[in-house]
Length: 486
Ligand code: URP
Ligand code: ZN
Ligand code: ZN
Image (tube, rainbow, N blue to C red; front, top):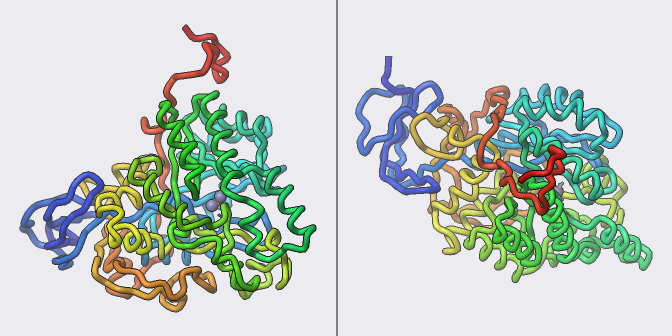
């Protein structure tokens, strides 16, 4: 019998914290040896000379096989979504199980667990709460959080999902009591609805007006408001898909006060702008997502806020709707106005290449920051570290061997998702995953995919310190315990 199942030889191991020349020994799905020159036998040796060897990506915001709440069907199955993730270097996904208003949560989580059994890589879910009724808050959520679903998600906009400020406080209360992070889609709902009505009323239904109905200030206002509510409850939160200086500035100010507010952005906000929403509806729909793509100065602001630490991770917000399908982007008809086109872009597979190319190759970040942004920080924030997000002894052998020199023109044909387009068609990038391993199993190697549906395990997340509240309320009254604290 071999000493190791796999040895990865000759690569440069890049963690978020350090870079070392090391060989990696893998046994039973875990990293069991790291050495300058590893001796011992192995069933398989992979030559990584000249390549970076990094922890597999952790994509903590992606919508996979999620029942749609806004019209349009999610184009991805758990098999296709996680297959495309693996081909793009990602080895863990955290997707969503979503409550519709009036529904109970437990049956929906059970159904989602069932569907996710087809996953090719390890996974977990956030629970989307659209109606925090008494039954949901007292009967269902405590047990679900304790079952390892330690993150909740709320929408401040979208008619079918949005929760108001009072409901947000109820969600924060249950999250704080039982130990969960709350992730937030932060945009001012009433302002968006008002602007939408005015624009449509003026005959301005083209996709370019999607950006006009939700300018940066609606994101800033909602960020600022939800941060205040989180501060009132001493509840750690993460603001999803930050797109602009205005929102990032609110987050930074709160972080400087010591508030536990974390932030992510997404590749689409590095490379798309509101100009991409112009053209005919079909063209504009390919990039229509929320918040809307913004401007080149906003893209530059995002990199600044990454470098100063305001924004800690980059996720795909993979939200796939087909262009050529009656239940896709155009569920409301071919000439539907912007407010009736499904929101979201696919991006699980292109996330890491775009961040590497725009970030490392263009000199905005270094390779260790790349690992932090695409893997380690999300693993820490969502309670799967150090099982995921690091190359260290005992960690799962979720590894991405990176070809930093490879030049690729992104096309729909080369991707492995089930969505019928990519918003990045024709984009040139430098750097692409050469090999991906999930728990020691090679699933992507030099352009050949060998994923296995059902290989992925559910990651039940134990309580963890990273999201512990600070124990600081604005008054001596603790609204969660109902007690006055000394
Ligand atoms: O447009 C987007 N981002 N669609 C997916 C749902 C969400 O808002 O995250
Ligand atoms: Zn969102
Ligand atoms: Zn999303």
